[in-house]
Image 1 (cartoon, chains in turn red, green):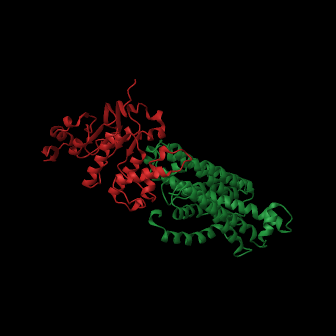
Image 2 (tube, chains in turn orange, red):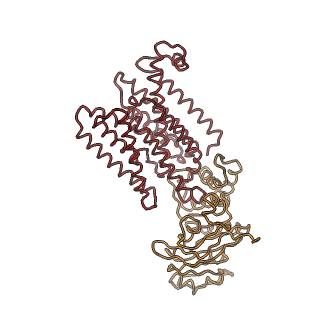
Image 3 (cartoon, one colour):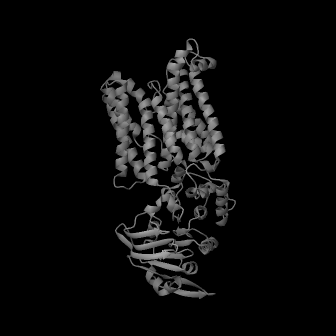
Length: 258
Length: 329
């Protein structure tokens, strides 16, 4: 066992919510540099699966290993240094500046009595700049738009600097330019050795920005395979229960509902 | 985000103000005692007739008031984070209601002061366990459910208190009403609330940065490495105990637990590492000043101190709210 354990590994994972089965006997690994896209209709269980993978809710059966260790073994703090999670919804009851929020990402790297250092502030500023929020440092989160809050949450995640990114609809609420910029950002993170698991709605973008795709049919069936093999018009038509056609433009494939 | 140095500086200034407020409380009253005599009375050298007034009357009352104000502000700040609701205050979860029921029954049955305190504390503990048990029943725990359970238990207690008041004989009504309004004159030995204040600050401060994350949302906090179940239980326990001790010592003094955390948040920001100790110092000072006014403004008549805290706090709060940058509202 000299090889590095995968960033994420599931063994016979079963996920259920409210009596509904999302998946059973799911085995997969995400190694450094890999990107996995999760696709499925609304309510198929994309978020449930991602929150389970993030250790926020228990699995119905099976194991989830992060860097070779279970969540119980890692503890919240140990887990926070390995995996980062982007929630689908933002909830802010109290105001705070964008820089303060980005700095919360440094929490798992600080000791109990430590305060954020100048280095931490630099990391947070760089993270804000990376998601196009340079100049927003002093802005209050409650005055930001939905898309800006989404990018602020991503900046927090970047400041956390985990090896494994679990992203629930990372590009929802974003303009096209920001969608591509952020998918490129995580592509670079993966190229530098991170692992990325994300739920996406656009199969064309999944094909372009993921190595593999996991299709959740919503009835417990799940299919996993290399993105270019599994993302076909036929399978996607069955997945979304609506006929789709694939169109190739400049070597890029996109899928259009009929 | 304040730096550690700035936080220490601000706390030092607030501690100075707290000492000033206590000095004022020791000096002002039916007999005016100059500050130099107050100081001499404290260090124990001969200070004439003032020594007894300062040492055995005004000092316990000022220290007790300070501890109660600080505990209330602290409990309010903690509960606002726990419930992620800016409207939360120490009484929202029914603890004062439970204490009120205990105290009313004790007065109704003619128990001694110790009996009243004992039953009030038991009532507070019972309400705390009841709310925790009901809100936690199936293992699920949401802020809404906790808040709703607390509010319902509080109004149930309110009904029992009203019932007791309506059947109580005339001569007991005055004592009951004064207990309900909150009053530092009945306090006595301030050791317990002071000790509670120190212990609770020492317990809460190491978790202040985790509380910052909890204020941003439970799932966010959990993914950033906060053991939220343990943290929430701890916060609930600590805030409830603080409230129970204050209510037992001085009745339900309103307003401080709601307004002081907001005052501090508006002027210093929402970093709990600064907010918690600053709210404690500010809450303590405000209650000491209010109590000093309550016993001097229309002396020899004493006003309910809760009225004074509101009369001072409301204009200050509204002023800060109007001019604070949006980031802190």
